[in-house]
Image 1: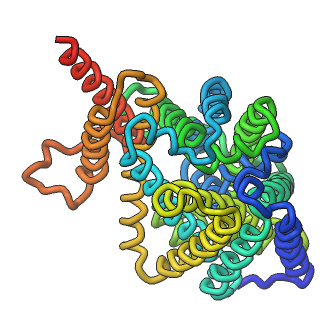
Image 2: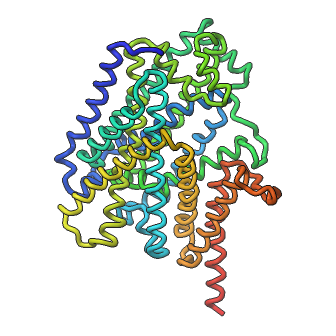
Image 3: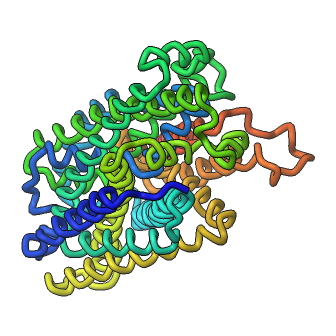
Amino acid sequence: MPSLPTLDFIVIAAYLAGVVGLGCYFLRRSRGTEAFTAAKRSMPGWAVGLSVFGTYLSSISFLALPGKAFMANWNPFVFSLSLPLAAWVATRFFVPFYRDGGGISAYEHLEHRFGTWARVYATLCYLLTQVARMGAVMYLLGLPLQALLGWDIRWIIVVTGVLTTLYTCLGGIEGVIWTDAIQSIVLIAGAVSCAVLLPLDLPEGPSQLFRVAAEHHKFSLGSFGLGLGESTFWVVLIYGLFINLQNFGIDQNYIQRYHAARSRREADKSVWLGAMLYVPVSAMFFFIGTGLFVYYTAQPERLPAEIWQQVAAGKGDNVFPYFIVDRLPAGVTGLLIAAIFAAAMSTLSTSLNCAATLTLSDFYKRFLRPRASERESMLVLYGGTLGWGVIGVATALAMIRVQSALDAWWELASIFSGGMLGLFLLGFISRRARSPAAATGVVLGVLVILWMTFSPTSTWPESLAMFRSPFHGFMITVIGTLAILLVGLLVSRAVGRRGRV
């Protein structure tokens, strides 16, 4: 098991202390609900853009993208190619829609369009998804560090959760955005250093990477066939477009940043910066994964047998962390581990602040105390941040022992969140759609999502085998969203015709 030099520990400790200190620095500036949730709408676009980028690239992506390229090819990178179009839609429609609306909650307008149930449904879907996401991010941060460094995964989870909750609670959204900006720079610096050093460490130099990778078709973007039952170029592209429209259009993590920007122009700039920065950085991670494949194909003895066993079982996520600890020089290893922490903490801080904001706006003020004082509202925001932090840490700790149950919970959260985009688009596109049409669309759309999710699995009865979904899993969000939208449009039109008779 590799051990870290003292210099690496110093780099990691300095990073963690710096991030927490920076977040706490904004304590005085985050006093007040407007400051805590929207930074008084004063943030520059470049800082918000780096924060958007940091929200996109969690520790899951930091480890998973190289793992995917190591095991297969660049087919998942096609997801990133949909970002320019999604960013254009966001700046053309979503940013002005939310900034003109004024409400800090991404789901307030759903109540105006379809009733209280729509707002509560969307908010609960978001909160459930964020809890599962926080747990997964912390668990997947601790898993490779425990395996490679011998650190207790429980302490990794607890320390990460406590530190992130601390600076998020004290610094508010302004502290979150500025720390996200610093963390994004650390993340990019770590990735660049690895992408440069890895090819230089190959036995035959950088040219070997491109030659061997080309021989094994590692740069392939996938099949260009038109079938929807496998992960083709077009399936991944369409999936990426819908997921990114969901992110920009209905995800509180992004909507809250639209409000934090000092102007509409700065908000647009943040969207473009975050989206366009993710494309080359994600390509860099795929390049690292391809380089790792060539590196260990040329020198298989450098990778321990237990990791080769994981690779044989289809799991390549631990290859990159092992290379970081085993092959990179002192200091650079610490920088890369700090970058993994950065990716995790950026995601966690965003989820915590947004969950606390919705707790105040969509539940406490909406149903309990509509006229809550400023002091009372701040106590709810502080308590909400702490409470969701505890829940996130507890979820991550629970994943250690009951992964199967929490995997099912994560799957259900994905299922219900899949209905959010369709509901939003229905209200955004159709003026005549009302609550009955929206409710019908959501019910039928969720049923479609459930069918597509569970019919390919062993839980589906053999007697109904002929009714299994023929679509690839990436199409679940796409078809589920379209089902909600189209059913809602058809029902609203039918009700409109009946009303005119």
